[in-house]
Length: 77
Image (cartoon, rainbow, N blue to C red; front, side, top):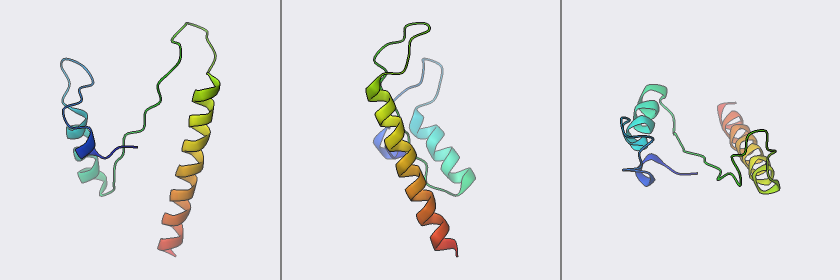
């Protein structure tokens, strides 16, 4: 995961603002921390399946988000 200050200058396309600008706007509007999560795919073949590495990364992401949401919910009680 990366914070907006860690992705400054990274562009989504030639006509889009840097990701850091979008992330900062979202953080301001939502009043929350915003992180970028990315997974490098092994293949973009049409009809291909998810690689074992991508599955493992997705599982880790779900576990980490669940942990963070659990911590956040515990703090609110």
